[in-house]
Length: 136
Image (cartoon, rainbow, N blue to C red; front, side, top):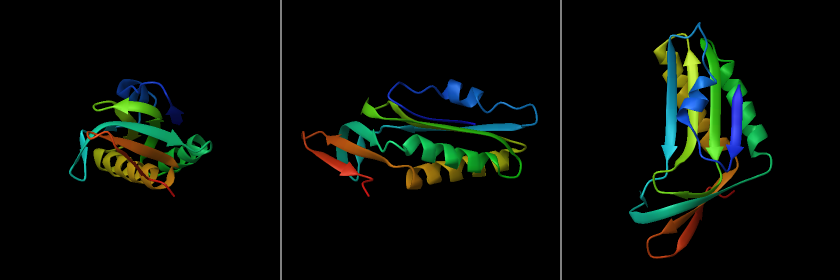
């Protein structure tokens, strides 16, 4: 199991390597990338902030995912700090017996991270203004 909140760049290969298991027939990865728009507004960058307990909460979600039937490994990493368009904001990897289990578990883990991990973002818009989202 691997769960990290970090200011450093994320590596898909590093996160995926942490779920390797000879019993697995599938490894699914997801990368969340900073895009250049949101709700019709051009976005130039995002500043991510996290609660001090965010990594512990992320670890609990990863552990829960890893306990699913057919799943042999789960890992997730989320960045904080200043990210530019194209930067990786989140990487999730799941290994499982079969591809259906791996895809379903990875999708559910991404949804759980977005809903349950206290990470907030301040989007910087092309007009120089900014807006927060994900705040409680």
